[in-house]
Amino acid sequence: MSKEEVLLNEDIRASEVRCVGDDGTSYGVISRDEALKIAEKKGLDLVLIAPDAKPPVCKIMDYGKFRYQQEKKQKEAKKKQKVIDVKEIKLSVKIAQNDINYKVKHALEFLEEGKHVKFRVFLKGREMAAPEAGVVMLEKVWEMIKEAGNRDKEPMIEGRYVNMLVTPKKG
Image 1: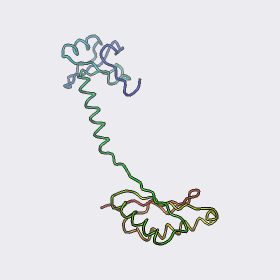
Image 2: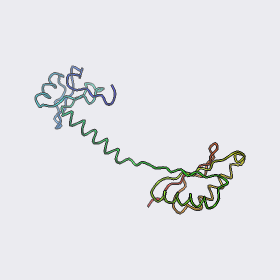
Image 3: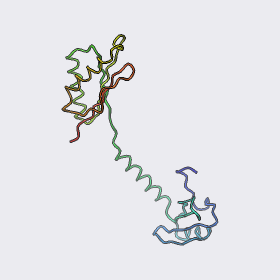
Image 4: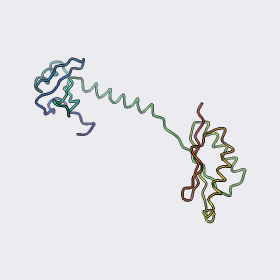
């Protein structure tokens, strides 16, 4: 039985159930048929909420309303989630200073908007022999933007790239 699958009314197989009303009324341990009669009399559904309990626990409630409230809760939780937007800025070891200034200007704008910025220095050919050049490049960029953000960690060499993640400052 999956988490989504809920047993209702006649689908409940247990002969005896511990029954609880929607208003908190406890009916105690009664037969399934008796619980179904009570639910039917009130115009509500008998919903199995704890199938693993001994005896299984059922609740008399309006299942449609219950499902609606569950979906509403999920939507609220989804609204409260914060989506982190990561912008990537690619650089090379032999980049000109005016190009660095231009890219740093964009990075500062992204940080002001609350976005995370990932700087990547691509190492070509022989530059792979001395990846420290990429680290030096990112240190140079860091000096230019450290007022606007926080560095996640030191520049890291990953394959052909040297990466550095900068997050916006709080407040």
